[in-house]
Length: 195
Figure 1: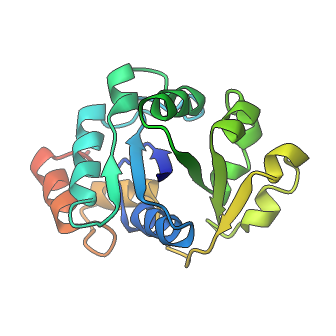
Figure 2: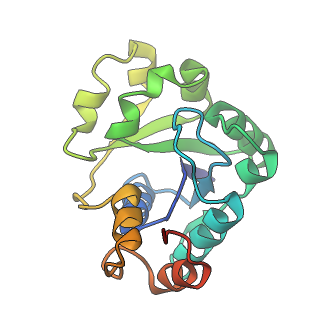
């Protein structure tokens, strides 16, 4: 089996996350692409919505998305969320070939993550262009042994981010262009991003 792993805060999960998951799933010929909401990202210092809300929104986002699934492994483990530990647990529980899917924005800081070389031995790294940064440019300073285990994913640009969506929500602006209807309904029902 070939698995992709896409982690993140998913606060909220939006069309860009789904586009990246789909592009990697198709481009790499994966059997399953697993979205993993973080309990807390150790490299991000802003406060996120409670993990139970982010997990629920991610589950809603992947409904009717063939080949995509959600794991609560990091939410269950608690804080902080380290990718290397998640990959170790996943590869033990579900042996197979793994790809860690990241955008070029995350690739810029990848070598600051906990045990990046170990991550690259647990999973190949699949990097997609994001926020105007090319995947090749974002990985140019990586060590050769990590770059040899890197694949590039073609992804059409998506002009949004979770932070933009949260700000639009706070201002009462329409969000339906960037969110699945079920996710939007949940946000409104829970009043997640209101002042």
